[in-house]
Image: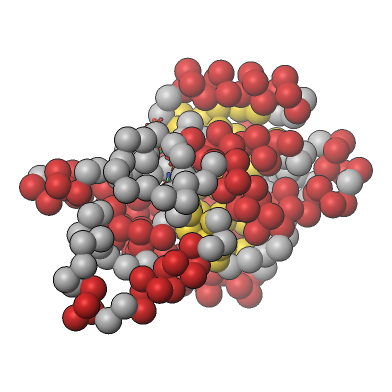
Length: 267
Ligand SMILES: NC(=O)c1ccc[n+]([C@@H]2O[C@H](COP(=O)([O-])OP(=O)(O)OC[C@H]3O[C@@H](n4cnc5c(N)ncnc54)[C@H](OP(=O)(O)O)[C@@H]3O)[C@@H](O)[C@H]2O)c1
């Protein structure tokens, strides 16, 4: 906390355009590969962090490590994205742990089924939609309404380049991310006048459990690089980033391939 108050360079990116006096940031999906790096990035810049996810034991280990490294407050909150009925109580609990006032939310939970399984079993396609999209809508609605009332706060949400164009190799997951990206565009448009910022983060391939063992990966980034890009983009009130940046150009090319060519490609 002292670090934040004393160093204007650190306090702005840590909390975006938010209330600097209260640096609590909620990280949803904090046990993810990128989530761990995100928690470190925000804590190293002076934020107190709430780590939310299903694996409380794992989160408790991360919390102990963060407290030791950075000396800030770190708390663990249990969260199951698919238990929609629990979301409101979860959100109230997070707010109360943060003294009624969160500076922002970083949302990273997600799940990618093998495409072959999702196209033979609707339950898996639905799980991908519910984990990546429906649950995000539920939680973002609670956070957005709260932040809109307070006229401050940031929402930093992890979508994916996979949502930019449907491909045969992962369109179940990609379509959920496309829906999330569109939802965030609308939310950003709605919240602009209240000063609440909404950042869409679109990573390319990142070295985490989600991509472990997948064939055909290239230009794979570290979770630390992606976390740092997201952190800096919140500080600059950016609307959307590709991370690493060159994915913007890769996706520009992929999006511009005409459909009559694209449908014949093996992507
Ligand atoms: N890795 C990539 O190449 C890549 C590329 C583009 C976008 N992204 C996006 O970036 C974000 C982080 O990805 P990652 O690679 O770091 O993922 P990861 O290591 O596979 O972690 C996924 C996270 O989602 C959580 N999760 C899954 N289902 C959940 C549920 N029902 N309730 C609560 N939490 C749940 C997992 O929690 P448990 O530990 O409890 O399972 C885990 O923390 C995701 O949104 C992902 O779609 C990743």
